[in-house]
Length: 385
Image 1 (cartoon, rainbow, N blue to C red):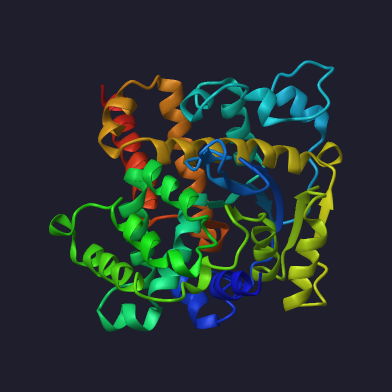
Image 2 (cartoon, one colour):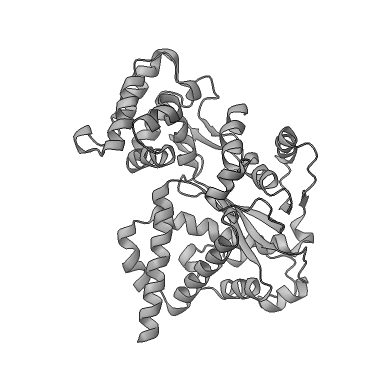
């Protein structure tokens, strides 16, 4: 836990004002944030008996919702009318409204247009944090075989190199998973370090075909095979890749201390979140956990989280080369809603880049941008015709 707090919280909460300015994050933000989550597997681990992850590694954990200038509660009667729901419905839930729908399917249902209009009418902001579980896990490997100083000495960027390692491993993720199971990752035994590194190298593209940054990583991995220690992937619980997601609930509380944060109840980790917050600032009282049935803004956040969870699954699972074909096949309704989602994301990004937080490979973010660029181009083409 201490290492996780040091590397993730201190590195990403922008406690350094200069770093905040560099990233375009306004730490003085004063908003009311409402949250719900999607793709919450509670723990991410490898089931060694079944030989598989307990959760689809392409389905990012998403903590998302809406934000506004003042605390707000939209009457549920208004939501019933806007979403044209039956009178006996007592709560907005993405699992009900988007039941069985993937991202593109959600873009065609009437509830999505109603949600986007509601966000517009009340001048709300969308916000999200998403964590690619596989990416977050394999970063431990890089931190065990090299360090930021060595990376900088060889002229590479630390954050870009994380993405490079992800790109080297994810195309052959089934083989990587087998290596993890065989060597009880992330608890590699001292006597198995050499075999683990060699096995991991065998899942990668041959060195002759590698780019310079890939050759650097494969080189330090080969070097590590002769070591007696892999600091961050030894002496841990076998097969447990992510203990829980409490860290990511605590992060916005500590980052935006002048804002107020309203979370849906998450009983299994609320005490742990409190411990993390108190470790860094014992005086903070800028957050609460509420029952979503009593808070319509959290219910609306559930819909936002549901859409964003499906969106990042779509991006992770889809090749960029397929975007044009897919987008050309969208209905007008789907296309308009995709454009509107991009507009809402851009609005939040312009307000404060800290409203959108991605823990994933840089290439995945570029794919997201490319998707919306193609969507915009296709919409313009259709409007001309």
